[in-house]
Amino acid sequence: MVSIAILGTGPSGCFTAQALVKALPDARIDMIDALPVPYGLIRYGVAADHQGTKAVIRQFERLFERSDVRFFGNVRVGSDIALDDLTGMYDAVVMAFGLRTDRCLGIPGEGLAGVYGSGQVTGAWNDMPGVEPAQIGKRVVVIGNGNVAVDLIRVLAKGPEEFHGSDLSLAHTQALMAAGVERIDVVGRSPADQAKFDPVMLRELGRLTQARISVQGAEGEGKLIEALQGIDGHAPEGATREIAFRFGWTPEALDGTDHVTAARFRRGDEQLTLPCDTVLTAIGFTGDTPATDDAGAVSPGLYATGWYRRGPRGTIPENRADAQQVAARIAADLAGTATTKPGRDALSARVPQAVTYAQWQAIDAAERAACPADRCRQKLTTTEQMLATARQTGDL
Amino acid sequence: MQIALLYGTETGNAEMLAEDIAAHLSDHDASVTNLSDFDPADFDTDTFYIVVCSTYGDGELPASAQPFAEKMEAQKPSLDGIRFAVFGMGDSEYPETYNFGGKRMEELLAGAGAELVGERVTHNASGDDMADDLALPWVDDILAQADA
Ligand SMILES: Cc1cc2nc3c(=O)[nH]c(=O)nc-3n(C[C@H](O)[C@H](O)[C@H](O)COP(=O)(O)OP(=O)(O)OC[C@H]3O[C@@H](n4cnc5c(N)ncnc54)[C@H](O)[C@@H]3O)c2cc1C
Ligand SMILES: Cc1cc2nc3c(=O)[nH]c(=O)nc-3n(C[C@H](O)[C@H](O)[C@H](O)COP(=O)(O)O)c2cc1C
Image (cartoon, rainbow over all chains, first blue to last red; front, side):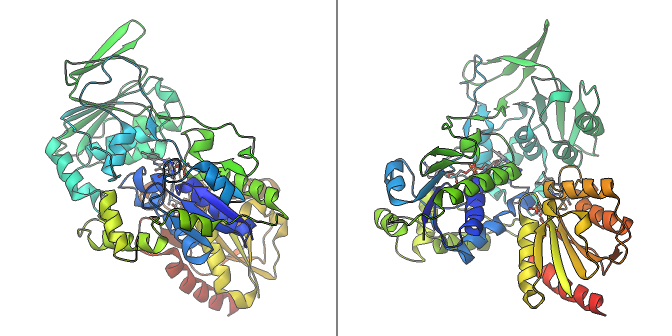
C-alpha cells in the first residue's frame, strides 16, 4: 500500500485524488489544506450566485466518505510542516496549492484607497477568512475583460432579490445595497473580439433586473461579439444602475490624493477619464510555478498540478484534465513500489491540530443550519469560528 | 438484458452518476464507458444503452461527448433496433440552453434510427435534488419499460 499526500484541496487536488483512487485503489491518500475547510476556490472564488458550478463538490465529498482519503485541514505547508518532511513521509507528494495573488496594473495610483484586486473582492464576498471586504462606492470602474470581471459586474449590479438561493451573506448583501452602486464602467485593453469573456457569462448579464447595459465598439464577428451586441441596450423597467462596456483602452493612471477619484486610459491619441470612487482590477492572478515535465513531475516523488503547475489560468474542467494526467504519471511511477514510508501515522502525529473531515462536516452542517430562508448557506467567516465549531465534534 | 452506460462529461458529474447507476444495476453487470472511448460501430442490438450527458459552453456537448458526435456525423450509422434512454445533466442558470447536451444526444441517436425508451430526464445542478435521487428511480422505471 502506497501513501500519497496532496497539498491543497481545491479542484486540482480533489480531481487528482479522484483519479488516484481509480488508478491505485489500495493507495492511502491524505489531503492537506492551510484552511480548516476544503475545496479552495470552489468555495472561495466561484461566485456565490453560481451554486450550480459549486455543486462539483458533491463528487469530492465521495472521496472522503467512500475511499481511503483523509482531510487534514488547518495545516499550512511551509509553516506547520515543511515540504521536505512530507516528501520524507510519503511515496508521492502532489502540490496543488493554486495561485491567487492579484496581478497589478503597474500604473501610478494603484495604492490609492478605493482600488482593489478581484481576488480580494471575490474572496471577501465569499467570506474567505482574513480577507478584508472592499468599500464599494457609487461609481465603480472595473478593469479587465475576463470571466472574473463579469462575476464582479454581476454581483455589483444585482438587486437584493437576485441573490435568492445563493450563499452571499446578508451582511455583504446589505453592504452592497447600502453602497448604492449607480454606474459600472467596464474597460478592457484589447478590442472587443479579443476579450476573454465567455459569451454565456455575458448573456447572463442580459437577465439582470436592475441594470441598463450599453456596449461601445462591439464590432466584428463571432459568438462573443453577438453576445455583446445582444446585451447592448438591455433596459429593464425601473433600472437603478448603468453598466457601460468599452474596449481597446489601456489604463494609464488612477487619480486622487488619498482616495481614487478617476481612472485614466489611452487608446492611440485618444484619452478617456472616468470619474469614480472605486476601481476593481480583474486582470488575472500571479505567482511562481515550479518547473515540471510534461506530466507534472518536479523531481522523483514530487509533482505539481492545477493552477500551481500551469499558472493561474483556466477553468475547473481544465484542472480535471491536468489532474488526470498527473495521476496517471504517479500511478506509473509507483507501479511495483514496496513502500517503507510511514505516511498517515507520521502526519497525524506531527499535526495534531488538523481538522478532520468529520469536523468539516460539522462546520458544513452549522453553516447550512444557520442560513436565512433565501440563502443556501451562511458561511462561518473566521478561522476561530471554524475551529470552535470543529472542536465541538472531537478534540482538536 | 445487457446494459451499457455511456457518459459525456466535462467535470465528472455525469461519470459519477453513470457509475452510481451501474452499481445500482449490479444484477445486470452493467458496463460504464466514456463516450470519448465509444465508436458508433460498437452499438449492439442486444444491449440497452443508458446515456448520461451534461451540457457545456453555449449549449454544447461536453468535451468527452464531442468525438462521438463527430463520428456519428461522419459515419452516419444506421441504429435500427438499438434502444436507449437519456439522462441529461444541466443547470437552470443557463436557461436558453438548459440541458441541450442531453437533447442533442437524443437527437443524434434517434436521428440515426435508434428508439428512445421512456422520457429524457434532466438533473439541474442549481436545484435541490441530488442526481442519484432522480436517476435511480428513473432507471428502474426505464428498465421496466424496456423489459416490457
Ligand atoms: C474569482 C474566481 C472565480 C472563478 N469562477 C470560476 C467558475 O465559475 N468556473 C470555473 O470553471 N472556474 C472558475 N474559476 C477558476 C477556478 O477557481 C480555478 O481553475 C481552480 O480553482 C484552480 O484550482 P486549484 O486546485 O489549482 O487551486 P485552488 O482552488 O486555489 O486551491 C488551492 C488550495 O490550496 C490551498 N493552499 C494554498 N497554499 C497552501 C499551503 N501552503 N499549505 C496548504 N494548503 C495550501 C488553498 O487553501 C486552496 O484550498 C474562478 C476563479 C476565481 C479566482
Ligand atoms: C461553463 C459551463 C457552461 C455550462 N453550460 C450549460 C448549458 O448551456 N446548459 C445547461 O443546461 N447546463 C450547462 N452547464 C451545467 C453543467 O451541464 C452541469 O454543471 C453538469 O452537472 C456538469 O456535469 P459534468 O461534470 O458531467 O460535465 C454549464 C456548466 C459550466 C461550468
